[in-house]
Length: 124
Image (cartoon, rainbow, N blue to C red; front, side, top):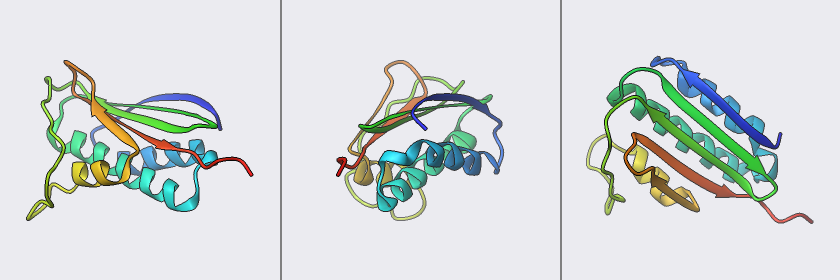
């Protein structure tokens, strides 16, 4: 599937699974390993939003031949996130994984929204 999917997810344990299904539906241009990485990242970000955010969770997934870009946000306050420098001693693996696995990632200025991009595989 190419295009954009936008969803509001409840703050519940099932939301990470729904997010993985949406990313998988958009992952046609990704190798199996890159799709697994994208699913891990979206799952971690949705779980973080469930734990630390407020209100509903917004998921936006855009895809095309160049790969996918996923955004996870909530109604929380502005976040200030710096890339993790080392592995966390306990818990807190979400942004560590995103930092290591995404081709690029960031935080939307002034919002509680984190995005990542995974490039697609070149056509044969």
